[in-house]
Image (cartoon, rainbow, N blue to C red; front, side, top):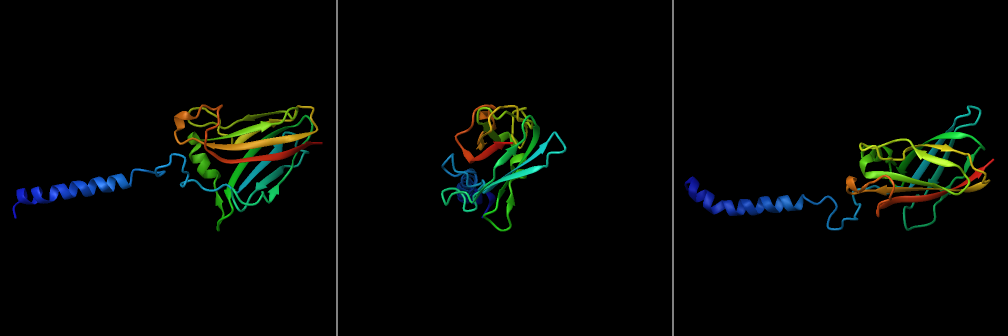
Length: 191
């Protein structure tokens, strides 16, 4: 069989095979654009607060829901304790402890910072929270923040929501995405 006959016989089969392989490897998320199969489940959020006053001890508060979304209520929600008039530096860590070994997801969020943003909200009178880390477009990420307890409320809440943006260009720094990886509320007391 010469090369011309070989090409005429097998070129269509080769072209179909190459197209089929290409189509099967194109979709990262499958047919559903909101399918986060490539994302890990967030079961644990830890916030480390370091006070500007060195006499105030460092504080780590934890929210944990080991059975993941849709199961039982969270098994741990610590209370954030703030001192009046103190400024804190905050650091957030995220993990999936429903698997063994547990997965630290903080580094993944850090590496994909253009596609993630934490949104914080303090209830009225607790003070102000400012995100201090940025992505490649200088938009907030939220793994690091400054919290100033300058309000007059004796108690309230701090909500933390992690948004995932499939397309980094849809992240504008102020509006959460329609894909929330985790949303939690910590009780806060001032004393």
